Image (cartoon, rainbow, N blue to C red):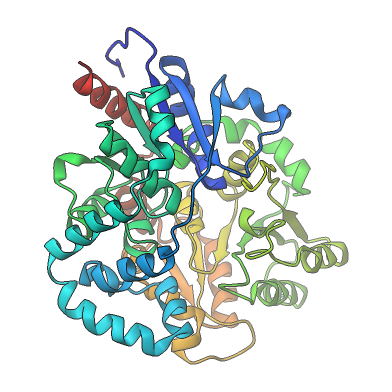
Length: 472
């Protein structure tokens, strides 16, 4: 793609507040392009600290800590934004965060929902509340930074839901600076935080998300750009195939024998990860699964050394020590102060594991889209280990969440509602890896947009166009 020439290096502020944002943006070709064409000012949470060993990844960026002052009524303001003034359709999406919130204070949320049933149907009310918030919490913390750097653009990996980014967007708009956000995941607009300040330009993965941005938050079509997901760009290349032997050796996989990948998520959302592993081990030992089958446990980066979302890794290590068929892929996590980004090489390991797996087994997780992109059959864990729970408490309901239901409907993954069904599905996919391949391709087409390794180029072109339109 031929980019329009930028004749001088204007400053661009890139705001990163989560470890996955580091993975998605800093470790991408997009960031390398921006660092070459702009003077990058990297805004990080105040307690972040990039070790010297990782400074080369930032390509000479100026690092600025974001120091914000919490407003004394901020929690109340956020509650009202999410539960009273947000659009009615958005507050009614079926997702885990809404469930948790409503369980904590059921009567408060019932009263809020009653008000939302009226006010949430009037888009002008949401816009008025957003404007009122901007007057109460205007983001003056960033005025000095914006006046000093005079950036041509503010680029954020959060789309305007968290305190740091909301303040930065508000301050940028007061200063007349173009703002752009890259929505990091497919479930964000429908199932995560409620936007407190709309960025002027929004980059999304696919047409579904473009429609959500328009319908749920009032973005005009011309302000939303469908570019695909940055984190999928490496899947289009051959690097993972070239490094297969190296990564197999690191994980301990015997290339002569088949394996399945068991993807885990935080026990906070699914506490039965280890039980599912035990079920797979038991069935392999008893002959219901091939005797030479290897089980590769792919732990979520979020569970490594995290006090809130972490998992007990010793339980997995104990099984790997006892059963030679069990292999562990424990993501290496960098320590940037409060930020915990996955190692920049971790995506390659994940790509190798999924590309060559007989099948991938997991609870409702974005890993299903990764597996589809890499051609691996997907089995959803729709049962609660060895326990039987009613639907309202079962992991089965997570496959009906607003964002997840769409990929289920594409027919590219099967949901096992019992241990026996899971074992049967593993056997079927091992016999025919092309089973449901058409459905997996539909998931890739509808959710990734284009698996061509060029999402970064499309986003870079949007940045360039917006910058040059805004230039004096």
